[in-house]
Length: 315
Ligand code: PEP
Ligand code: MG
Image 1 (spheres, protein in one colour):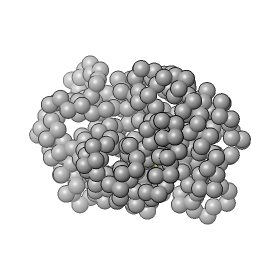
Image 2 (image 1 turned 30 degrees about the vertical axis):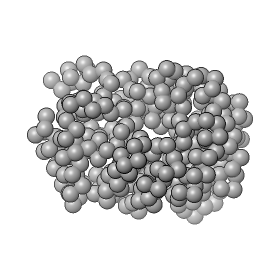
Image 3 (image 1 turned 60 degrees about the vertical axis):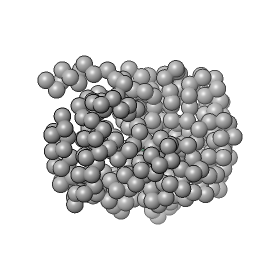
Image 4 (image 1 turned 90 degrees about the horizontal axis):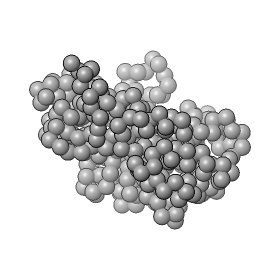
């Protein structure tokens, strides 16, 4: 029966009592964006631009970049927003023209927005290219930065984006940023929780390490507490807070995070329907109860069990 329901659901997503939740797609380039446009999504929550340039040895020109970004924006014309993330080069995603060589600990090194500390031109040229593509395509475009740790970084980034008249946001994927989400929201327009890295850095466990998967689990109560605190800051400020890490694709966790106050969930196209169906089966109050149950749990297994019970009862 579940299969039939999953097949029939066609968006837009809302809880059983009609509270809308934006379901968005994670994309990597024009072709994946065209695929994702076939799913019942409200836009793109994460365009990982670094994945367009994995094979480039030199920085693409502004015009070359704009052409690549326009492909993604065109796939969602009239259907934005498309949230474009600036280069998250480094660590697990080395980019020849940007990544710093020879770092002993690249996950804690010069990656993401940090590349702009000694090379602000790289960021400015990318923002200009995104703005050019937004202008050409007419698609609503927001820009966000990865790996932001401080308010000063967020403020500097927002200034560079707003100079082009576009909305500026940051990823919340470092615990320091989650802990001061309220102050981050004073200088940016939206937040997006990257739970893959937020989990890695909260648990001090490499996200690629196959022998640490019990730690690299977004159901860890410490991670959920940071998610909850960030979502609450967004609610208080009246600004959007989304989730774009893998955890958004977990239907049970998606319900709990909506209960915490997140306003959008961004995931691979294939994950959208199960999440839409799960949300549509429960009220916002049930999602809130699921959130409390998860936050009160002592470990991931207990959190999953408690949330499953709340959601089953509420269906
Ligand atoms: C994240 O860290 O959760 C995220 C969405 O970014 P990426 O997986 O590209 O690091
Ligand atoms: Mg990340």
